[in-house]
Amino acid sequence: MKKTIIPFLLLLPVLLLLASCGNNSSSTLRVGVAYDSGGKGDGSFNDSAYAGLVKAQRELGATFIELTAGTDETDASRQERLRQLAARGCNPVIAVGISYQGALAVVAAEFPATTFAIVDAEVTAPNVASLLFTAEQGSYLVGVIAASASKTGKIGFIGGMDSPLINAFKAGYLQGARSVRPDIVLESAYLGVNGDNTVWNAPDKAQSATLEMLAKGVDIGYAAAGASNAGMFQAIKNTGGGANGVWGIGVDSDQYTMPMFADLKEVILTSMLKRVDVAVFEVIKGVASGSPMTGLQTFDLKRGGVGYAVSNRAVDPYRAAADSAAAKIRSGEIIVTPQ
Image (cartoon, rainbow, N blue to C red; front, side, top):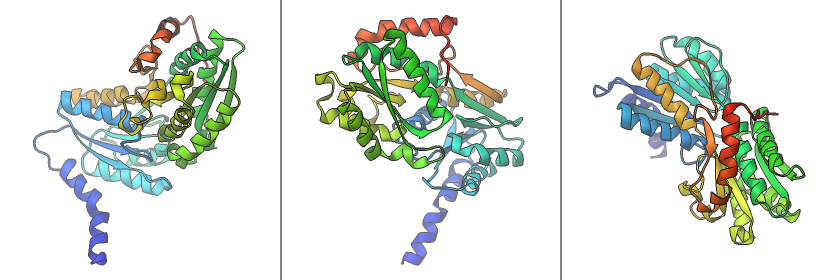
């Protein structure tokens, strides 16, 4: 019995591709999405990408197929995932995450008539849109909120991997906090080295790092670590959370509203929004209109690419300061640096 079941399971993604990206007479707009490790349901940037797909389905009549990376893959496996989507006629094909950078450079050349897009990385090719986000600008805003809410003058930052991409979150956060309290103290930690994709789903590591920070007097923590953020939130909840003036700040999606964080939402003051959904929708809309988006595309505050969440009313006392900072960033009065 096992010998017959396993091959079928291995073929299942291909069968889904045939159903969703090929031979679909009801729609000519067929989108392929390759998620990063963690996939849909991570409560972070993969879920934000999915929100863009849903909007395209609703407003543009798009159909789509979703494939997800494992935690420990080679470029060859990533290439095959992208190649399957393009070979079945999906256009555009969207790669979510910097880990697809090398693979997309190869596959985009093989399918010159297909529009590709990649989140958080730059690939130079005539048929690729590189979707970058000024995470430092959004992080500046939550830094303003953190410093305004902190009673101890000590705030924390937990990054997923120690990389230039995540360092931009930390840099903006600290710059925003110092704009409110120049003497603010920042405690920081990373869950892994650059290239270690396990960091996005390691809540135990985030919990341990948070406990160390709380012991040093940190009362506001910000984590840019995807689903690992749950560990930070759990540590804060275990110490009494918002009732004791201790809060967590989420990332990418509005983590206060994400199902996977439902039991922890009470300690989530706000989240830095990286609007992957906005970028994904724009890519799909460009193909639908006959004007595919290509080249370097930067999604900043002016373009609605970053921001902060207001779902938890506990953030209300700090919104005026954050909104004032946002206006100054948009006007150029404040320049936020990513390092």
